[in-house]
Structures are given as C-alpha cells and as structure tokens.
Image 1 (cartoon, rainbow, N blue to C red):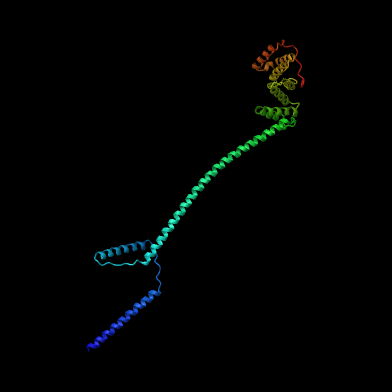
Image 2: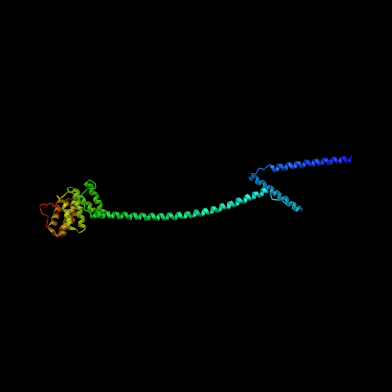
Length: 299
C-alpha cells in the first residue's frame, strides 16, 4: 500500500512537472513569436525610469553592504536609449559647428557688403563729379559756339519786353552772353523802345570796357528822338562821357546841354551833380537857348 501511494505521488509529480514545462514552453513560444511594442519615451516614462534606477541602486548598495554582491547586466533598452542620446549629442555638436560656420560667413558677407556700399558711394560721387564736369564742358562749348557765331535776329520769346527782361537778367550773370542777347533785341525789334533801352545798356557795357567808339554808337541809337524814359537821363550823361573820351568836346558839351534841358528837371540829384561836374571839367559854355538836335542813329 505504501508503495502504491508513492507511485501515485511520483506520477502526480511527473504530470505536474510536464504541465509546468508545457506552460513555460508555450509562454516562451508566445514571447518569441509576439513582438513587443516599442516604448514611447516621454518625460513621464523617463522620470519613472530614473526613479526605478535609483531604487535599484539603493537595493544593490544594500546587498553589497550585506555581503551579497549582485551582478547586473545593462538593460538593452537603456543602452539603446544611451546610444540615441549620444547620437543626438553628436548631431547637436554638428549643428553648433554648422551654426558657427554660418555666423562666420554672415559676418564676412556683412563686411563685404559694407565695403561694397562704401565703394558704391565713392563711385557715385565720382560719377556725379564726372557728370558735372561733362555738363560744364558742354555748356562751355555751347557758349563758345554761340559767342563765335553771328548775332541772331530771331526773338527767343516773340515779345520785345520779355526778350529785353531775359537779356538784362542774363547780362547780370554773364555779361558776354547778355551782350549778345541785348544785340538780338536791337535786331529783332529795331523800331521799339525796348531796342533803344537795349542799345543804352550795350553802350554802358562798352563804356565800362573802355570801348568808347562803340559806346558812342550805341548811345546814339538809344537816344534817337530823345525818349522820355527812366533810363534816358543817365544814358545822355554817359553819352557825353564817351564823346569826351574820343576828344569830341563840342559834341560832349552838346549832350550835356540836352541833359540839362530835357532830363534835368526830373533827373536825380546825384545825376545832376555828375552832369555839372562834367560840364566844369570839359569847360563847356552855358547851355544854349535852342534845343540841340537829336543824335543820329549810329552817328
């Protein structure tokens, strides 16, 4: 009887062992055939992993202190995570190096851009200077061409008053060009009061230049019929000065007589004083009772 019980116990043990073996084998097969889902490493999982690692470290420290050393193999997932972190570190270092190179290139490009801007500004200044010189040369060449050509008799504005105003303004800034403009007025509008005033102004220019012969001619043209205008009184005194400079004392005194009789009452005190001084200097006789004849054009 005891032997029979022993046999049953042995049989039950074998069955139990066989069942455990089958379960373990099945579990192994399932574990081997069923792939594990990849772990999604986020902040929470990393913190949990860190806490577990610290617990294991404390447990290992206690076991080692108790004389029960434990050999721990590294977790493949931790090793893989460490490798990925190492790769990330290397990639960050590469990116930092690339950024440093890019920053260096940007600094170099900025420097070159500043140099280009300075060079461009210098070039623009030189171009403007060159353009100004070219314009000045062109204006000078045009001016010389005008001065060397014959005086035009065509009105630039179509109106004698406007032609005279423009000529007077030009003579104030450029006497030579203004001289030609005044001559144009005399040619374009020969029978107008504007032409006579232009002749008086031309006489003034010739008198200032010491060209007394031409000054006399222009004044004679200006004073035909003794015009009653604001400029006629001074033109008459200047006419007398030009005549005296040509040693034509009698004609000079006649011009002063004309001034006294025709323009003296309305002339300025300064102009009357000047006429009196010239009469004394030229030793002119007292004004004749009769009015002098008007000067002949060009005479």
